Image 1: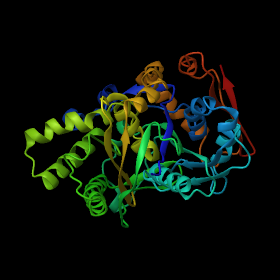
Image 2: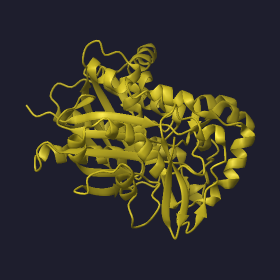
Image 3: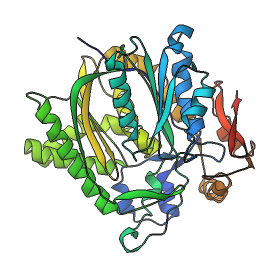
Image 4: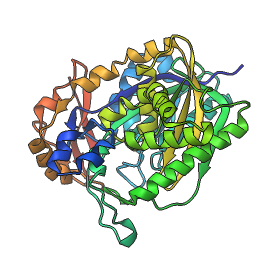
Length: 420
């Protein structure tokens, strides 16, 4: 039997974060409505952090754990992002360079809103399954940041976006895909996908967002149901309540996932509220833990939820995880895989929770000051020099391990430095 899936996985959740309950008070948001987000913290990308530095910092521990021979078998590098820095040049070239990977490597970038990370994962899985290069490995890096600027919209794009700020995060998830799926063994052929054209959320200009939050919720709910039903057609005797030990969802914010799960339990299992609440706490909540601390990292959020599930749930016996990915615009997919206690132990060695705990908490004054500086590095910035003394406490949250930071931009070319 063929085996394929995630051999190694890591999350980088930045160096600074904000307590979003304090943000809600600061912005004078409706408290009851804010609590429905089920958010606790959000990673804030500092001016010298970008999708490239985030991606390298997520992938480096994985690559460093490989032998030179194993490292040379990385023959595919896919970056998945909606935070690209150039209309032509892929950020995969920078990540490839700073990870010092073999030059005999296919590298490119995918953009498909929040679905991009799963699109990259599935492309990597099928590349390994093709056996065109037996023993090869693929590195998938989903990386996104939010420089929070909301685009002015017309009549169809004027929904209140004030509640998007607390849930919009920054971070990266790196996944090494191979024939040795120690972390997550993919169920081959168990995929249900569903998509259609809808103008729910978008980035009409590189550095800001627009959209209709209500329409996005409706599209997410429809896709969750229809993608699962397509999965059900392809997988014999599948049952939503009993076939999956856990469920990992793309998580714009926890409340959206809770609504989708409630909708699925009512339609697929005719469940009543007490059963739905128990099932949510048992099968879904473990996947929200890291998402509630990092925020929505777009293309990487499905993978962030999966990492959270593997790290925080119980795997005394092997468990199948059902995964739902959604990207605005839209495309979605429901797929599954199996995780064992060995996989959990391997992921826990990455110390994801410890890395999140080391982040520096920004005060509201520091956060507002930082927002004013977000214009220093934007899409198309030609020349810039970053101030290494900005937020020094955040920059030093490294636990003795080197991190990559943006140093300067010279004639559009980005230059980085390792800080130990």
